[in-house]
Length: 250
Image (cartoon, rainbow, N blue to C red; front, side, top):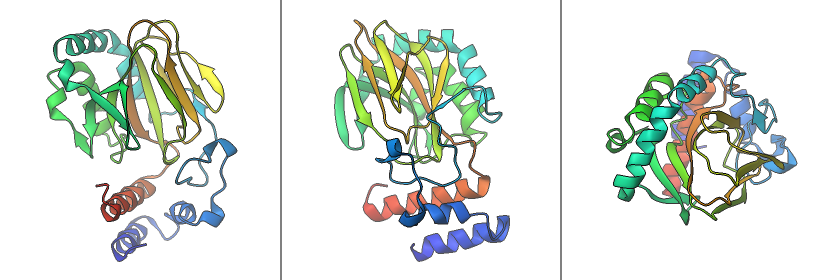
């Protein structure tokens, strides 16, 4: 670890206790990283987090209010998204997934690089407001990641892959779902139900597809995994931010 990371970790331990970052330091030791075989492609696996690919969106008290708010706002979110797609198509961009650009996977960002994307607020005000009130202001969103409308064009597929770590969790609001679409996590395939949320641990291998005749859109929100502590979240934010700076990814 760099001196900056060590100093930040020491300050967190002084505030939260000597053992508050034990799982984070274990995560950084490859000899202590116990992981499920289907998490093999993830960079970091923090020990002590449930090795469950799928979660009930309502089972975690921290996340359930986010789910309820987005599901309640679905009708307005879908209408605003349709207008944005039809009238401001240029605001959507090819999604870059770990530096691989995919033209048939389009994204409209609401939160990125640790802050809201204010240019998107006039396009999708309902989703932007709900995100701000339930996730940004409450610090439930993982500032290391993002929130975006994810649109798969007809015939598009996302190849099986693992995301970077298990200390955040991915929430999907099914906004506009044609027939022929699905998602598989750890070998278990499910379908989105329009107006409802799915919640899964994307450190497990997952894939998605649109075999329908029109675009499929979900709203994706990267939230802190509810089994992480406030001390760990502070340390992980410092750690990943410094690693990205050193590697030129910031």
